[in-house]
Length: 329
Image 1 (cartoon, helix red, strand yellow):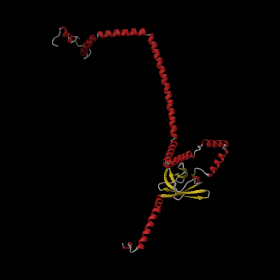
Image 2 (tube, helix red, strand yellow; image 1 turned 45 degrees about the vertical axis):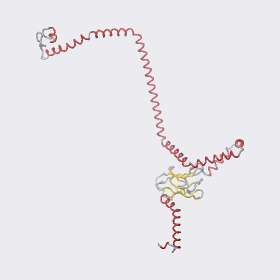
Image 3 (cartoon, rainbow, N blue to C red; image 1 turned 180 degrees about the horizontal axis):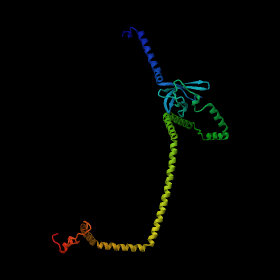
Image 4 (cartoon, rainbow, N blue to C red; image 1 turned 90 degrees about the vertical axis):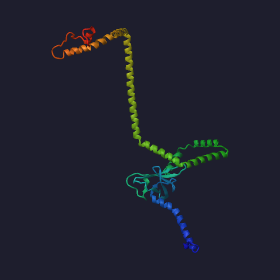
């Protein structure tokens, strides 16, 4: 390793310079080479740049997916070169639009993949498929229309009113301008969050548009449900009316035939009392009737003749025992 020692200072100096140049070149061109290896180059022909600058973001469906690399004037149009992530596929009908990214005027290029096929790297999106926030013709027509509809007297009155309400103390004006500057700085710091809010609002709006038919169907079903409920309400109302009529009729019937109903109930009460009083007798009769029926059945179950045992005949055994005619049972 003596070739890097003090014996060869020139060689050591040359090597150090070369190493330094290599490191600087790697720091300068390394990120560009990495970006070129992971992205593809495309172009978009627009009517005017409208404030778009190199290094502005390129969004696909609201997601940052690339960077504007350069702008070049070609006749009455501007060629916007940009690089897009290699994972994004652009169809033959893809479109591009320059959008206002922040309220302070920063722009972005929004690319929308569309159409069949595959747009090869290096291809350009033509002018008819690109849009810009405004053109010089739009500004001219707007200025002309504004100047025609401008009320000069009202403008003078407004200027006079502003002059009257403007504070004479320059400090107050300075404080007001400072407040506006702070608001602008706050908006600029939260530009990304504001952009996300706007993107989310746009996505929500697009979802509602996509579900328009479903919402219309849902509203139609709600109308059907309300109509059905209205019909059921009428049915219930008719049922209540019929019940009220039935109750009124029953009340009139009871009022007219009250004496007859009371008489029937009194007689039924008397019958019930008689049956209750003779309940024991009836129970005994039923208990004794069963053996008698059994004997009759046994006596008549052998053909067309009747079997009779004397002297009991059809008298139950317990009855004979009770009177002392039969013993041993």
